[in-house]
Image 1 (tube, rainbow, N blue to C red):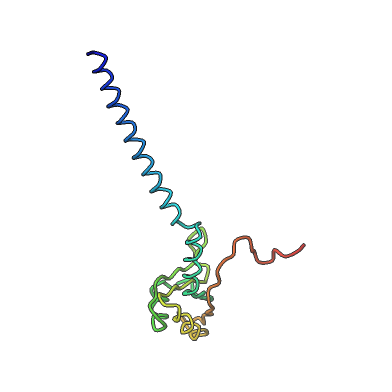
Image 2: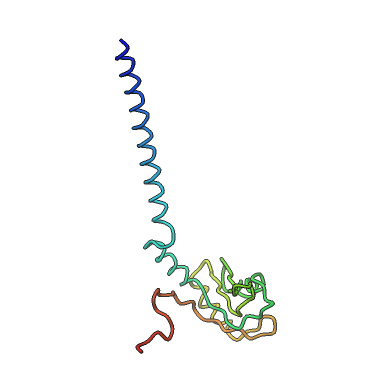
Length: 142
């Protein structure tokens, strides 16, 4: 009788361990699934290229210019999704920005705003190119 009680306790403990192992397997599968959707996966590259297709590069941006001012300047072209003014490691503006639109056809409209003035400075507008890893400017044959 004592053995059967011990055996029942061992079986119960084994079931608990198996349940725990199944939970861990499910959690691992969920984490792996999430990892595949983070940047670095093929989908992330495709979505980055798609976002770049809806984005422009703006050069000659005044250092005092704010993202809101650039958004106001380009909102006539289409719905502005995001404005990024690039800065150095000391948070000083580098003088250029990226503007991402919700619609791809807004890029053509935005290109028409090249040589217009923001903060009294003429800006340069070009379509944003997708960065290709390993392709650095000037890294030609030596």
